[in-house]
Amino acid sequence: MRFKVVMAPKWLDFLGLDENSQVVYKPGPMLENMPENIKVKIDSVSSVEKKLSISVPEDYVQAELEKAYRDANQKAKIPGFRKGKVPRSVLEKRFGPSIEAEVLQDVIRGTVTKAMEDHKLDAIYVSEIMEPKRVKGEGFSYIASIEVKPEIEPKAYTGVKIEGEKLVIDENKVNEALKHLLESQAVLKPIENATKVSKGNFVTLSVSDLTTNPPKESKDQIYEVGSENARKEIDQALASMKIGESQAVTFEDEKSKKKYDIQISLKAIKEKVLPELTDEFAKSVGPFETLKDLKDHLEKELKVEADAKMRSGNIRKILDSILEKNPVELPKTLVHHEVERLCKGVEQRMKEAGIEKLPEDYSHEKMHTQLQPDAEKNVHEQIVLEAIARKEDITVENEEIMNRLKQQAEASRIPISELKAYYDKSGGIEDLGFQLLVQKTLDFLLTKANIK
Image (cartoon, rainbow, N blue to C red):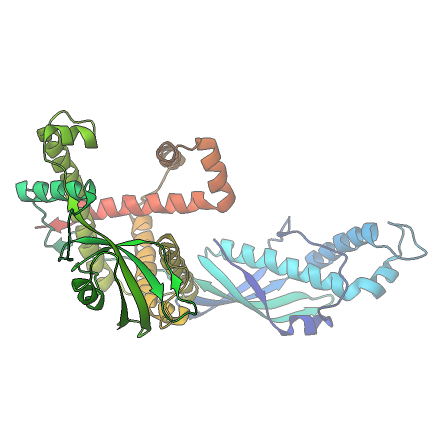
């Protein structure tokens, strides 16, 4: 259960404090020996929002204040008094409001947590503390507004009828994979006595930006003439050029609408040369003795990949059916966090691709808006899958988590103790356990589906 306490704006006003008030008592994150006679009244605002009216007995508040004053007495530096010998009246006069503020804030942290645990509320976020009120001799009360996961009774999740995905791996698929492998091993060789550029040629170009003074020249780059990603303006210029010649080119990027003025210089004309498809080629790309061994290996890999795609496609169809029959109100906090996670994923992939910033016409706000539907669907899936796992008593044992950690450590060539320490520090063990729970729940749904 993860949540954050956000204090209401009038909290400091209630205690007669401001941001500069001195505080000598530093409470811990959670109180010990919580009282059993806390009164809790729960009002349901919606399926994802509850208001908890909590009353804390006076004797408990007084006991915590006594501890705080004893602690303050040991730490306070007041002229004319030794540590531990400061009269209570002096401490109350100098630090009273700030000590009470910290004690009551800690009381809130402890009692709201106890209330949520006692009433089995699957809390996500404590959004606000309202109407704090302390009457000496009567106790302390407040209202906590919390966001929770909705309680649902999942239905129609077994016997889901879907048209199963079908992927056939035949000789054509194997030959296509072999062709891609050949392409990856190709080399570019200069064309002897080449006088003109043709479609399919690879040319070495140097490019100068004519919008700078003096023109800024880039490193040499390889450009494929007539390819899917080629620019027609550059292709047209190259058609009339010979090695050693230069020509100015102007074009506008269709997406950004940015205009480019460049000069290209043709330095070399090359062609792609593929290796011969022989047993020697098979030996050069892996532990294969013959070309047949290589083809058999490719066929096996393609079948594994096809099985994974079919499984993924079937799961998607099953989940779409289940989600349609199990609508839920989505907690805003979970959706917001999922949008943030998806955005970080996009930014990380951009960084890995060498793109340092978003395009000029694509803001973070626009990315958030576009990713909102995906985030909502992901949160919906999470809530429904957790509900199904609870109903079917699907759990994850510590041994399963450790086995997955061991697999990851071996794959990454990292000592398992080092990987576990990283997960423990980052809270990743809980996430890993949830991933395994989702996987086991999806496996269950697949076995119970009616796949034609």
